[in-house]
Length: 117
Length: 116
Image (tube, rainbow over all chains, first blue to last red; front, side, top):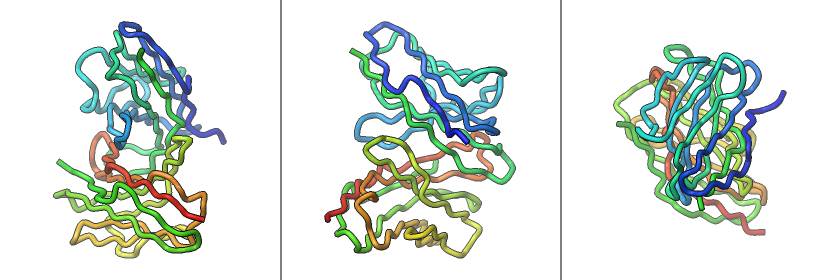
């Protein structure tokens, strides 16, 4: 049973370019979460998605960042016009259970390390 | 707003000894989950242990156990018989059960080194 998969593992972009990070949840998981880890810091929540729906984007920067989880295919975190401050590790996690029900554990992917030159 | 605090940026333990990592949190909710995640140099986030707030019994997972003090809002992790492979960054995390987003709130982390 494959775990959460993320690609690429490392991504280098120049300022002003776009970054696309992909996440495939564990089999049977329909909930995806994105977190960002800046150097020397803990993980910070960005967005929570279900298939074709954004449930909570309270941690997403208002500009340049977007996320989607289409009916088919992986979840995508997109960063437009990247700046040096976007350099970080971006982690995706998945779980089986939603709000109001017995909360389940989030399992993390290996992360994508984004470097902006 | 909920917060999680890990007051020990670094800890060190001798191999085969026991170490305790501290975590405190602040919440006005009564139903929530607490987690400890391990992040080794590979940067992969690995679940170590989970505690449901409604359970009085402390969770255990092999050499890992927690001391959950709900009234004090404290959630420490004890690692017994420490091994070299336990060296990693450890993060404490909180999740409100009924939070629509189900997001995890993480502490700043404690870096654990294990001396042979």
